[in-house]
Image (cartoon, rainbow, N blue to C red; front, side, top):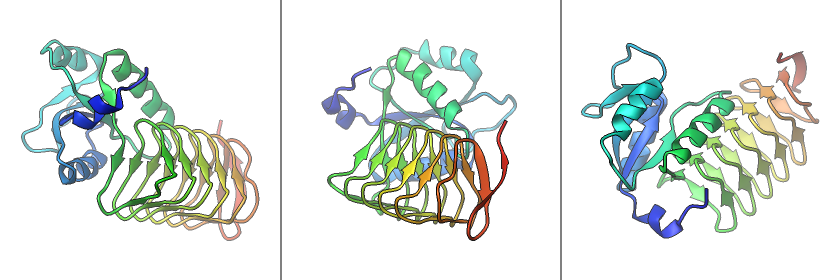
Length: 224
């Protein structure tokens, strides 16, 4: 769905899908830029809203109940982190089909170069850096103090965890997960669905679905 950038810029109300700690992180970010979270959704029953005063609805039925209220001009973000990029993309599609508008969250303390490109639903959180000519796919998360250097391309649904350092000209595949404090050297390619463990140092290419840890990072298994 093509998004009218003027309409997106004028939005002031946002819903989040995901009612864990990441929802708190996103609410703080959104408050800093003048946006209000008006509803939360989560597929897990029995949860309480982590955001005081913000109602929580459960699953698709809850979403349809909220949608029946008829609110228009509402944006959305997906508050689900980790290696659940496919879930983020599925929820993204559902909310777009229901005429909600995908936002891009950039914390005021983050740096995003003028020539960087951020896909719909992407999140660049506190003190993170996205440098010149970098590209983030839809529903990519660059978490607290993570750094994505020049000309790096990050696929859809990827998550770069807090404090990770991605050097220049790196390629990160769709749905990959880069653990907290991990480092990738320049021109490395990390495959789709790969997982890089916390603190790992990636010195060579990592294939699709591989799980790699250590310094230098070594493949320990493959995801099924």
